[in-house]
Image (cartoon, rainbow over all chains, first blue to last red):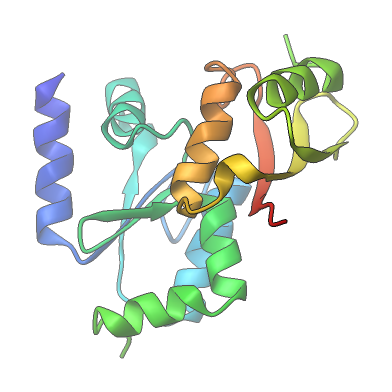
Length: 107
Length: 78
């Protein structure tokens, strides 16, 4: 189990914005993952899309790691921001853009 | 084995007795719901904490028997 945690931690430590998703940013395989990908593309930020479908162990591991039952999951600077609902709500309220600006991640 | 509207509503109301709950079966298939929950229990908590409380109330069903739940939570003032 901690093999997966180490892998997740490694990804979070080496990428400012990480989206754990189903599929890839170019080919999302779920409506919710696509919605968040579109928001990040709209904000024109660089992000790492991690396909959790690569293994069942990874798909469950990330849910345990975050203590969050669904995918996608958005991380900014190693901190869990939310799933599709929360990211969408933050985007609509301008809170996501502010968070990214505060962390100087918005070009 | 999807969840009925009643089952979801009972689980939410037992965890948030003061809640105002709007629950809609958006696809008519007992698998895609939207829920808006307003409760004092959310007061002072972050969105992530609020949603985690709801997922806990759903006793592990979220992401399993319950495929999709578009969730909105709000604090209750006054």
